[in-house]
Length: 218
Image 1 (cartoon, rainbow, N blue to C red):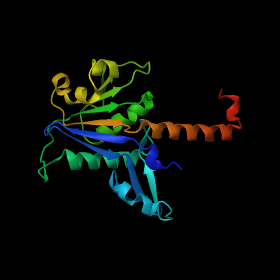
Image 2: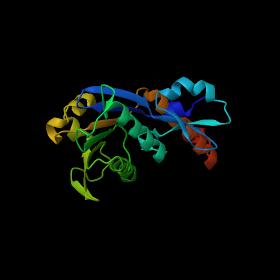
Image 3: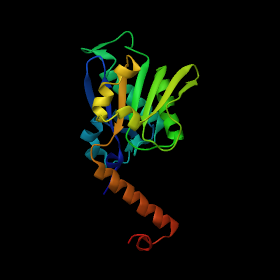
Image 4: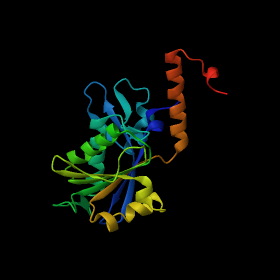
């Protein structure tokens, strides 16, 4: 049986000052009655089995298939990751950010509305220059957008990669865009989980529409 854990994205965060990369599962566990978040990211995997049949707690995928499904929880998770992996040096909180620039790399094609959600999220985290790398979905890219006094850059994947792997391109991004505070990579380590999730969602949609799968599957 598939769960929210299977559908959740894997979120990588790059610390440009230390050169380190950390990965967290894009999930949170929350109290159903109070909506208070009890744990975030990889911590949820350790307690997932305990709360699976719980009436009090629920597991939620904040980001799936590249899309933000729970905005507040996603903001909370990414803010927590930045605080844990970027804003602290040797366990001590930095007084100032290294830069007001941040980069987001999205592996899945998403709509302009979904891109706007990521931009809003990063602006909420007080970044002033946001670089969004996304697959070419036929929308205008490359132009700098001025929004609420901030600079937004939407760049196609092919232009950004220039023949490199995503990790190498992200690590070398400062050579093109200047000093960055961090990079957030929205990816999936096991794409089979996405495939199963998409297939189960498709089956539910067909059932809701009253369509027999044998009518459309050769």
